[in-house]
Each structure stands twice: as C-alpha cells, then as structure tokens.
Amino acid sequence: MKVAILGENKPGFIQPMSLGLTSMLTRLGVESQYFPDGLALLNYQQQASVKNRAKMRVKKTINRFIPQRFVLQQNVTAKQLKVFEAHLPDFDLIVVVCHLPTAFINTELAGIEKIRTMFELPIMLYQNYYLATRGKWYKNIVNPANYGGGRGIERYDWYLAASIVSEYPLTGVGHPCSVIGHDLVDDSLCINAGIPFKVLLDFERKGFEKYRRTQLRALAETNTPYTQLSGRYSQQQIRALYCEHSALFLSFRESFGLPIVENQLCGNFIFSPFKHWTPSHFIGKSVYDRGEGDLGRNFRIYDNDVEKLKAQLIKCREHYQPQQVRDDFAAQYPQLYHGDLDALQAVLDKVSSGEIHGRSHLGYEKLNAGIVGE
Image 1 (tube, one colour):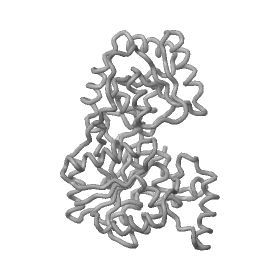
Image 2: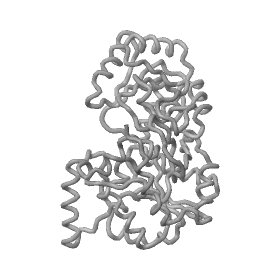
Image 3: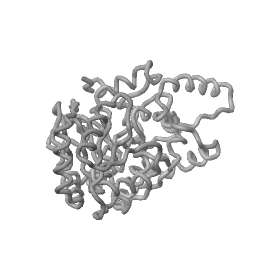
Image 4: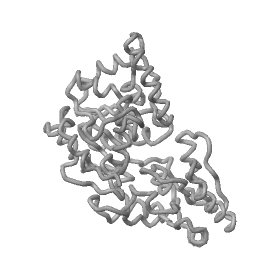
C-alpha cells in the first residue's frame, strides 16, 4: 500500500500532523509520500479561461466573509498540478490534512471532487477532531450565508482524528471515523529543567479580554514572570519558547489546541478558566454522553477567579517538576503522543479489503441529521 498525504508547509498544526502520520505509517511498514503543497494543489484553479475567471471572482466575493486564517492560498502552477495528477494512480489512499471549516467549504479543495471523476481512490480527512462532535460547526458550514455553503460528513470516505470527544455527544452508530491520535515524538519538544518557573500567555483574542485581565492580575500579584505570544513564529521558534516556560495560559476556547499537547511534552502545566475551553482533552467520558468530562492531571481550571488562579499558580511553582508533567501526559494521553498504531492499521486493512473505497462517502449524508449543535 502507498499513501499520499496532502498538507501545507506553514506554521500551524497541519504540518506536524502530516509528518506525524508519515512517521506512524513508516512504523507500520507502509510507504507514504507527504505533499507540503497538497492543499494548494487541491485548491488550484485554472485562470486561463473566461469561465474559470468568473469562478474566481465569485470565490473572491465569498472569501470577503471568511476569516483569512480559513482561506487557502494558491501558490502552485498548472505544471505542478499536472505532475501531481499523473502520479495519483501510484497511490492506494489519499489523506487530506486540513482544518475546519476549510475542509468542508464548497469553494475550497475543489480538487477533491475532480479527483473523484478521474480515479476511485478513497479520500480521507485527518483532523484533530471529528465534525460530528463539533457542535454548531456543521450548521455554520452548510449555511450559504457564512462561507458560501459547504458539505458535511459525506465529503470524505473516512475520517482520522486525534480525538473525537467533546461536550457534544456522538449520536447513532456506524460513523466513518477512527481515533488514531498523532505522533509528536520529536526532540524539539523537550524539557529544560534548569529554567525558573515562567508562564507563557497564549495569543490574545478579541472578545476574550476579561480573561486575560484575570491572568495578568494573578501573575502580577504573585510576582510570576511571563511571556506573551504575539506576531508570527516558525515551528522551531514556537517550540523553543515552549521549552523555556513552565505553564501555558489559554486565552480562548480551543477546538483541540495542539499547543496544549506540545506544552505538556515540554513539561508545562495548562491553565484554563473553564473546562469547556479544552473539550477534546476530556478523559473518562463516553463520546455518546453529553456534557463535560474530567481532564488530565496537568490541567488547572480556575473558573476565571483571580484568587483561585493565584493559589494554583503558587502551588504549581512551589512543587514544579517538569519531568512529572511530561510523564503524566504520556501516561494519560498516550495516543496523543505516539499515536494509536492498532487503530491506524485497522483503517488500512479496511482499505485493502475494499471495505473503504472511493464511493464510501455516498452513504454518509444521513449522518449529518444526527449532529448535536446545542
């Protein structure tokens, strides 16, 4: 078997997840090829004809209403696309690594539908989460007023996820999703035991200023040094910062939050005002149950109470053992560290047997009706 992994080469979770999937496949003895311009290839639009130029004008109009972080930039040529399509018959499976809502928007990744007209390759989506347990995301995506409309579970032939748990329950059975975690075994995620206790503040988000004020007050009143993230960082730069700190303060609710995982691997506690800001990290909870679950030992939830935050901060600082933080994470979330090879192998076996194929997606539309959004 040979697997094509389509991602992008820029800061974010897509590249490390793509490379991690490559590593997991290698450990299973499966050949794969990572295309760092894969999403751009799927999003390529030939602009030579009048017809396609019209399509691009429509897309440009729609994208005025889409946050820039959700719009894929086109930076490939027609020749690159032709070479890519010529090599597709060499593969048995295509895995797209992308984020919400882009992975489902009609005006993005149109190459998926084009590939379906040329080959019968199964096309999977690999994300940190699964659309069916993402609450209002499905209704927002398919609403033409938001992103120009989009598709649901029926867009892909199978789904790979790091976690599917959240406060929103998975309803029904037979969902085409396998929880394989991800492989983040990397020397750049390391412990620096010689540093003093220092907090890393996540990027500020508009509308969440009151939570940052609580954090800043607690840091000031406990004389705790900190760094606040701003601007842009390469993967190497941001991971170096993680290694220089002892705790991460979240600034908003995360759909998954790869930095939550990466920081724990660097020995950092995770501080959040509420449990529901870290839903993909619930443990001891069935995916079929509504509501919150427990969190791992490295999480500190302070209910946006400054006195509670101060007490937790002082306690963590006095008893800080970075190796223990990392060990606790590896023990409680092993699949988020080195992946679940058994789950991944089971998916590959389904592809080999023909159980998952290039038309599997045609039977999934009915599953959208069961998505809980409230």
